[in-house]
Length: 454
Ligand code: FAD
Image (cartoon, rainbow, N blue to C red; front, side, top):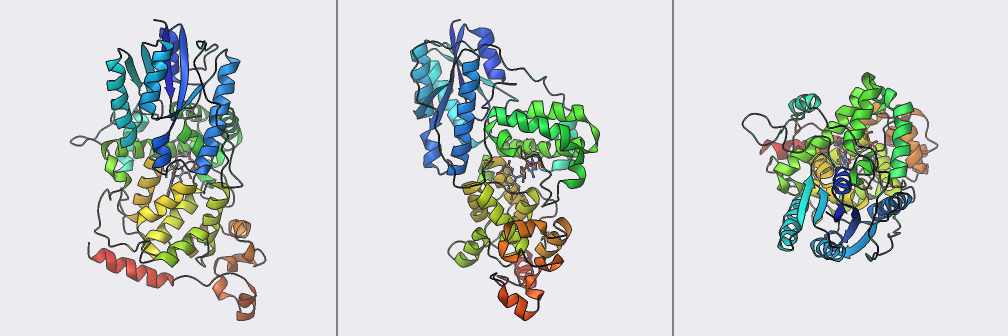
């Protein structure tokens, strides 16, 4: 066999890349290909922050391939058409790629398989490249997927993972295959983290050395920023989930244990979306909500998006999202609870806004976490409501997170920063900060009444 094509998708790395390894083992030369998919752009998924991160990833991948004697081939357009064209140009008889879970990815894979077969080219789809455990491998008795995390996690923990692969030493690429320049898009968030496998590996090393040990105690500390921030790297596949779990387990201890459990949540949501692709837009377990929407709650939604709800910790988190294209998990939980439960707005409105900005914006993790918080997903306590003031006191006890992101409150002392409406009238009037959008008790009553109908 002479030439194979490796189609890179959500696996933009050279370390632990089974499709690349298989292609190199079976062929004399390989064409590492990335297709900028115009349908993803048209669907509104390709937003500036993720395109900027993607640009870094592709440039870094190209540089890594060049160090190994190869290069990345970049094309743009309809992926099936582009892969077939490149396979024909290179005279390839095989194409290798990673399995993915979304309905769109699965449909693309089927169409690609048919189109390639018609040309006599075989498609190999590799499992456990974008997840640690392949979706569908673990199932409870009598169902095709796990609907509750704890039993899923028990099985997941016992599953033996494949051994991670090293990066190849050489990647010989045939001459004469035309390529676009890797893109150099810019994001909208000024504090966006850089992308690329080199950056992912730097971050991973630092995390394992000095972050992971404190994870169990500090992961909810909003101001401490003591989580790995590896989520965009897992999303774009600049870091392998299999390698991450192996290396975290090798560190050991309660911090690593708690961290690996979070990584398992990612696989949990992927196996759920793989089994129920419609859960990206439809309630997983409907509560028959008659949500407020863009039409009926426009001003509340705008205030939430812009971080001026009058609840400091909610506003701080929403402003972190806009500035960094990333938000702390505790912030995601409490801003999503505030939108869906306190304001009683449709979870899809919030999920869309997150996807517009998050650099790790991911259909499985975003939509299913939103559903979890809204109580239409897999939370076993679907009607729980997070109180933003109690959350703030607990996870931002000295107000450092709020002061960092809400400069209007930077001079407010102590815990008053979480309840500026309680300040003496004169002090309160001097602050250019809005009154609460809604009383928490009113929001709670509206939500409880709505769910009583269920
Ligand atoms: P760490 O705490 O260091 O965790 C390590 C890894 O575990 C993360 O990178 C992530 O891959 C995984 N993980 C952690 N928590 C979760 C979780 N609750 N569910 C699934 N996987 C998890 N995560 C995304 O990757 N993309 C999203 O679009 C996304 N949207 C979210 C929306 C809402 C409303 C909520 C509540 C959570 C969302 N999450 C999403 C999950 C979680 O908030 C982020 O993965 C996490 O904050 C990323 O930061 P980190 O890498 O420092 O996480």
